[in-house]
Image (cartoon, rainbow, N blue to C red; front, side, top):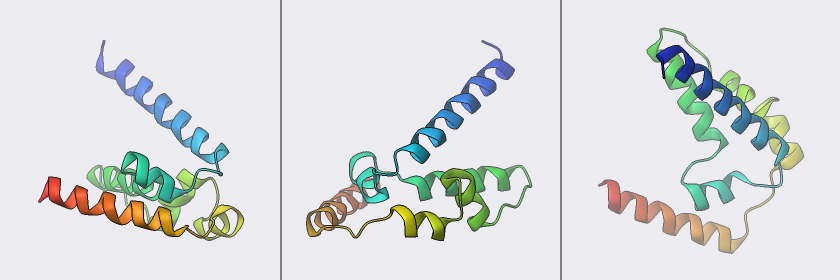
Length: 103
């Protein structure tokens, strides 16, 4: 597979992931962090960091809007729920394990 085709396929997969996350507003960022070790905010940060490598500056709020499909504060007001004690406990455990694995 040539580089151009690979890049196009990766870009299409990224767009599908973002579209999927925009539809699945019932899945909280904390759920994503607990299960997969990343969330929408991570994805927007990765996008911003990769843009910076290309000399393109994207402010964090704009990068989040690209992923969320709306301003982050608006998404939080519409969709973010208070984390349950169990979710918080699971998150703390996952972060401790991640620190242990990555030093």
